[in-house]
Image (cartoon, rainbow, N blue to C red; front, top):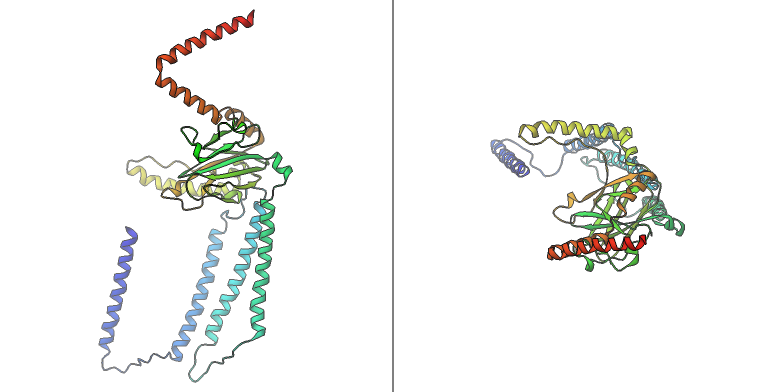
Length: 393
C-alpha cells in the first residue's frame, strides 16, 4: 500500500511539473525563443559534461559499495571441499567484468564528449573495418571460451564421483514438498530403499516401498545432519512441483523434479560450530542482533514478544518459486564432527520408517478394538511368562 501511495505521489508531481512548463511557455509569448529541434553547440557541450558527471557517479558508487559492503562474507565462506574452486571461478568472472566495465564505460563517456556535435562538422562514415571487427569479436570469444572451459572443468570435478568414493559415501535423500523438506537416511546398509509417490499413506509420507529389503533400515529426519570430511551423496525427489535444493554455504544447488531422481554430492569441510566462530560470521551475527534489538523495542511497545537473538545455522533452501510459502521452505543443516554424527545416528537410526508404519498400524487397530487390545496384551504377557519358564527349564 505504501508503494502504491508513493507511485501516486510521483505521478502527480510529474503532472504538476508538466503543467508548470506549459504555464512557463505561455509567459514567453512575444519573446524571441529558439524552438528549433536541432541541438546547438551549447546543448551538445552540456550533454557531454553530464556524461562525465554520470561516469563519476558510477565510479563513486562502486568505490562506496566496495568500502562499506566489501567486508561481508559473500564468496569467502565456503563450507565444502569444492567450494573454493567455485569461488575462484566467480572471482575471476567478477574481476573480468569489473575491468571491462570500467574501461568500456570510461571510453563510452569520453568519446561521447570528444565527438559531440559541432556546427558545420560532419561525421565520417565507413561501411566496415575488418581489423576492428576482428578485434572486438576474437577477444570476447577467447575470454568466454576460457571461462566456459574452466567452468566445465570445475563442474566435472564437482559432479564426478568415482566408484571408490561412492562406496564410502553416505547416501541421503532430500524430499521436497510444498512447503517443507525432509531427509531420508539409508541406514546401515548404505542403500536407500525404493520409493514412489503412490506408496504415500499415513506416516509413510515419503512413499517408501515397505517390502523392499533396502528400505527396512531407512529413517527420516526434519533436520539434516552430515559429518565433516565425509562425502555425502544426495538423492533428490519432489512430491508435487519443481523445487530446487539450494545450500549456499556448500556451493550446492540441484533441481528436484517430480517423477525423477536428481543427484548432487559434496564433502563438508567446516562444522557448524567452526563456522559460528569465524570472525566474519561473528561480526555478521552481531550486526543482525543489533538490528533485532532495535526492532524489538518497537515490537515490545506494541505488547508483543521481543525478537529472539539470531544464531547462525547452515540452511537448505528452495531456489525455485514453488508457491505462496516458497520463502519459508527451508531446513536446518547441522555439520557435525564424525564423533557427533555417530552419536546422532545411534540415537535416530532405530526410528525407522518401517517401524513407524507398524506402530501406527498397531495404534489404529488398538483404537478400533480397545477391549481386544486389552485381551491381547494380557495374553501376550502370559505367553511371555510361559516362554521364560520353558527357557529356565
